[in-house]
Length: 198
Image 1: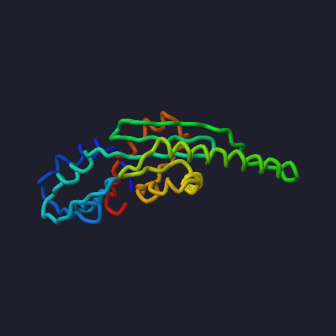
Image 2: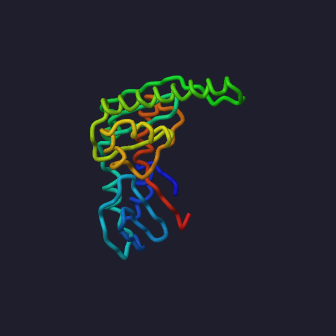
């Protein structure tokens, strides 16, 4: 499945409205002949048509949502509330975490302990910031490194709602920074498209 920006999806499918074909809506996606389209935030419309009918799809992908975003990697984090493509509130931070040690011996054990302490401090700080900056929203977008995200969510029970409301897609980002948060709406609203079993 490829992810395509919602404006490009609209440009591709809008001209096809009413043309010959077969359209089936169901299970949060739409199948137009042999193309399957799955919007990030789902698709409530259900129905089957003996022509190309894309209006419900285009209506859904044009809709903006309130989304709580948490991006964490060892080394940094970004938390923010997005309303559509606008950042309502955000906080980012970074904390040095040593890379893995290549050599063995007692110095490696000291190095490992130090790294674990640094990672723990980052996780605690990211969890505290997430609990302060983020408020329960209909959707949560998680990204960065899965193990780091799991550790942050496990750190505080009051962040449990994020896992319950998280979007199916995990957003892998290299550096959780403010610019990453600012660029995320493009990916957040990008639409999954599979062409002919691809």
